[in-house]
Image 1 (cartoon, rainbow, N blue to C red):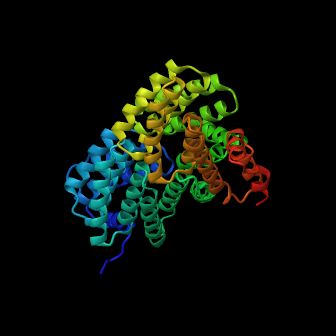
Image 2: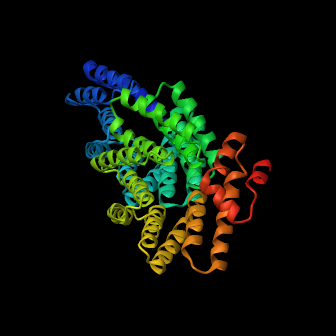
Image 3: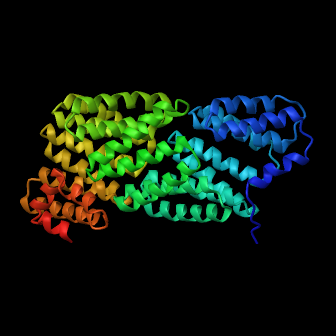
Length: 446
């Protein structure tokens, strides 16, 4: 039988241990600074607590973990990994050891190292189940869900995330619940299920704001804006991204991790509004920051949008430079989702260069990779593009009708009439529907 426990009970034993008062005071001050998202200050306080000799192993291990979390949140991944590993070496607490493996998984995942991350989460789950640690179980499931989403396995991702949410609800941990809800929203987004994505993100946002967690509030605002962006509601997208960027610029610590993704979205918004040069400037700034951080996933997404922006301008040279970089990063990430993005823009570039057969081959590769994750948002665009690339009218018609089917699957669940109209009336969407013989106005009335 699994014995259930929460991580708060571990720190509760500190009062009965022989810990110098100064070390305990520094630890508590570090926790307070962490709660205020002052991560560098918190890391310094944890270092003070660790400076004492003859500390009990559980206290030293917990303090190393907390310092590692602070350095991880500001993107100092190497330092974070060192602290988690040192804590793991000295920990004699099974629950803490399980949670530390999940932390190491988070560090690996942040750097696009999905295979080792998944291995850490799998071991964390095994150990957490063995000792009944709900937080370890929840974090392991959440991590496995995130890695599955990044790889394009949305069904497996949702299965793990649902189990993570159940564990955190049982443990009564609101912050961890919000983290899972954010991951569920991103997974729904990746499937083109934008209404469900917005709902999950909004629930996460409510929790973050109630907890005064500014760092993660920014993440939720950015993700909600990205959902509106995918539905061509650029006014709402800009509103959320402007708020996210403003908060990120006010909140300096940790913003170097958050800002590239917001800048990417800001750039995409501006390009969709016809302000291409401004949009490209935001994307290029975001690219430099993502590369500096070593965040391959952000780098891949930015490269994808830069390539499409240059193709939109008819600049094949600019597009070619970025599509080559994207292909390299996609190979490093080794995930269907990013292979699909790379193949898609390679196909578009080849078609623009007049190489129809090679373009068709690349678009087929993109379709196969995108099909794994059932990414409706990408699939309708892929099939619409293919309908213009193939030279057989009958095959072109088939692709156009498939694109229209994916559009209808995206539109039908939308509950907000204004949002539904924004999507259906967007020029690229209307063009596909009309070409497939579907009346957009009729779809709006359904």
